[in-house]
Structure formats: C-alpha cells, structure tokens
Image (tube, rainbow, N blue to C red; front, side, top):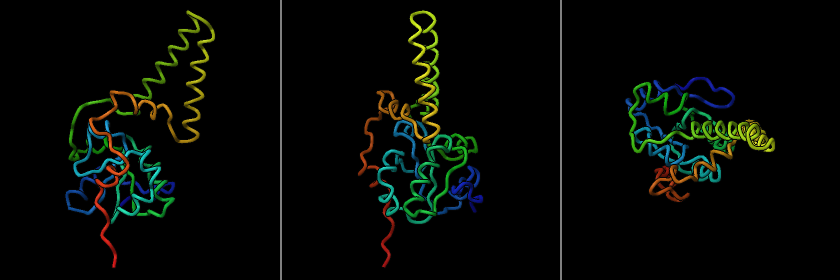
Length: 200
C-alpha cells in the first residue's frame, strides 16, 4: 500500500514501486519530465507525458487511466504538480514516486538508459548560477547596471517558488541539446498510453 497522503499527495517509495512492478501490479507509470530527460533514463514500461502537455489536457489523461497511476519526474516536484492537476479533474488513484527516477534507479529499479543529458533541474541551477555570477562580475568590471541581471534572476527564482512553476526550465527545454529526434505532440503523447477499457 502507498504511504499516507501528505498535503493531498499520496507518495510511493522506490522500493515499494519496484516490488509492486515485480509482482505484476497493473500500474500506469506516467513520467512527466521532458522527452530529452525521458530518453536519457526512464523506468521500463513507463509513458512520457511532459508536464506542460499534461497540464493543458488533464481530462484527456483522466479518460485513459485505468487502475492506479504513478507519477514520476526527476525529484518529485513536477510529479507533485501533475498530481495536483489530476486531482483537480477528479483523479484520486495516483501516487507520486518519492525521490523521483534517481531514487528508483538507486534502489535497483529496472530502468532504460539512452543518450545522456543533464536533468532539467540541474540545467536550471547551472543557468541561474551562471547568470547571477555574470551579473555580479559585469557590475564590478563593466558597469554597475549589469547588477540588475542578478536581481532579475533572483526575482525570477522567487516568482518560480511562489507559483511552483519555472519559466527558465520551459526556455531550456526548447534548447537544441534538449530536443529529441521526435518530440511528442499532444496526440502522440496521449495515444501512447493505453486507453482505459470501456465500462458497460
């Protein structure tokens, strides 16, 4: 069984998910990371439905899920956001993988590796940190006005925390190194998930 619901989110730990999959439990595993992150490493049998696509179409996913769904991302943040969007359309039979894909792999879970890239959270930290340093160095060496760059990044990170969203991640996801050969369309992403059987 899943752990008790916390803040409206029902967590499932990596060892439990590994056990349930080994026992043949019928779980629909939805990975809400970017296609590039999914291509780098994902749980065998999982479906990639990036958070922006899920957020725009939660009803479509609700119609396709039969049984219990497990939502996965890199650390649990995006999966929790996906859970909230599904809960808003009446999906209560979903859990969030505690610690994300990294924790599942560390627990010995069955994953598939592809082309290696940095995960999105690491890319955001690198971009934000670099821009802050650039702003500070530029303010000292070129013109004090470049200090506003650091202030803008700080304001953006504060807004990101308050809204539980990340504009920088959305921008980075469009960069060439984060593109896959065939980024899924909304239709492709939803059609990859088997439809729930019709109830008569």
